[in-house]
Amino acid sequence: MNSDELTERVRELRMKGCSPKEIARALGVQPATVATIVRVVAAADEGNANGTVKCWVSPGWSTGLLVDRPDWPDVDTASSTGSGLANVLVAREEKGTKVSVCGYLVDVFCLGVKDIIGPRMMNRSAVPELSAAFFSAYRARPLVIPLELAQHLVLGAVEFARDLGFAPAAGFDAIRGYLEPWTGPSAIRFGLQGKPFFIQGPYDNAARIHRTLERSVGDGNFHFTGVPVR
Image (cartoon, rainbow, N blue to C red; front, side, top):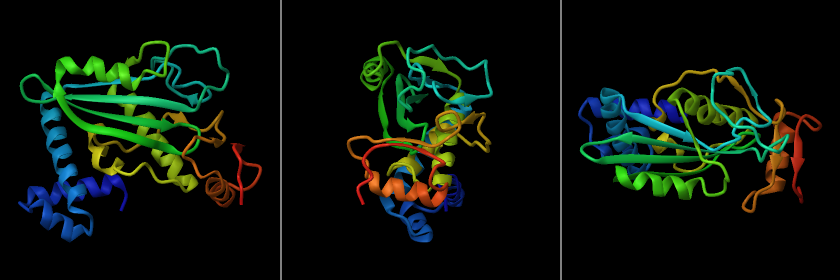
């Protein structure tokens, strides 16, 4: 089952009074994964009641993408193609002065969610420091965005990557709930101008990724920057 289905199944079983261990056995997943999803679901339910969610995205997130929502915020960048990477940070109000925070590193051209942070519980006053570190690779400040844009960007990229044959980063399912229910489709057309474009990172297996793209979209139907050693 995908991440949305897993989260909903955990929610349903939790509402029936099942313990995390019982849910793990019933669904055939690791107890630690279920425990994290239970915490995220609880936070999401409370957050839904309070309606307090704040999201940020790295500047230039839409460079190279086709976006059917001109009302969404972004800033111009000097690059015509961009890096193909976007950082998204989501903070949800908890009790008192506490907030829980999750972050997503998104390859919007090919691989979807490559890395995550969180959930991290902290004082509200600590969020600016975490945000500064999370967006430190960018010269301009991160942009405050609606939850809707975060959903279309992160979850849309996950769907795009799955269609290409790539799963999101380990642990993504456990923090999927921070982005709340979403049905799609995304208003963003991923890939460089709509075409998958792989840019090799330091930890990417270029050969495996090249083979996967050849199977999913066919040779000549994607851009590739890397060394696909066979």
